[in-house]
Amino acid sequence: MADIFPPLDPVFLDLGPLKIRWYGLIIGIGALLGLWIAMRESVKRGFHKDVFVDLVLFAIPIAILCARLYYVIFKWDYYSQNPGDILKIWEGGLAIHGGLIGAIATGFVYAKIKKLSFWKLADIAAPSIILGQAIGRWGNFMNQEAHGGPVSREFLEGLFLPDFIVNQMEINGVYYHPTFLYESIWNLVGFIILILLRKVNLRRGELFLSYIIWYSIGRFFIEGLRTDSLMLTESLRIAQVISITLIVIAIGVLLFRRFKGYANERYLDIDKK
Image (cartoon, rainbow, N blue to C red; front, side):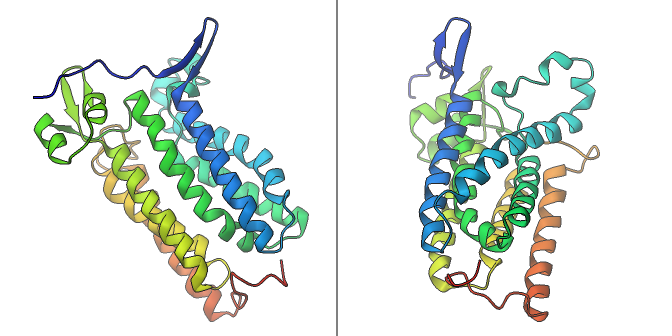
């Protein structure tokens, strides 16, 4: 059996009163990489190069605020007794669905103000969003959170995982499903699929709706393995309910836009915004 080492330090850099945690650093890296990809693609699609820089300046803080607010609301039994912990986002506790709600709402308002096509913006952003999610899950890994139920070390080694992942999945003498890794891989595959779908020249909005459907399918099944799910009732996981709802809505919007003729423009069109 491989040697078992202590868990990785969640603090990247300790400067005394200032601590930079891996969680925030990894999420930041994901956001910057996603922005770079979106900026390159937006220029090809006829937007000014600064469109996504301006959007991100509003979208990221609002998304983080909404992600935290969403999490705190559904964990209110704890935070009502520990209000001092509400602002400790560096320790984890950002709900992806809350962040998506904030980011999408910000994008919609931004598009209206700038008189741009929201669907075109969303299509360009979709691969960047899911790539950011794939990278961001490694912040959960460093915090030893968002994991699944107990498994054996032999099970993890049977997945041919490197020792640093296997060892990090050991918490207080128990090994757990690396659900962060399952979702990260699912999202990375989704990123590749969305990049390939760009060349298919889907109708406007359908790349973004494909992202919603792909992510939600994976999240529904992976959520069923997790032990830290936000619960609507004793047996009903909020993320699974939201995932099913998003799949139904995305398919409905896609069909509605097609049948009503609202999606005649194509992704590769650059003459209209």
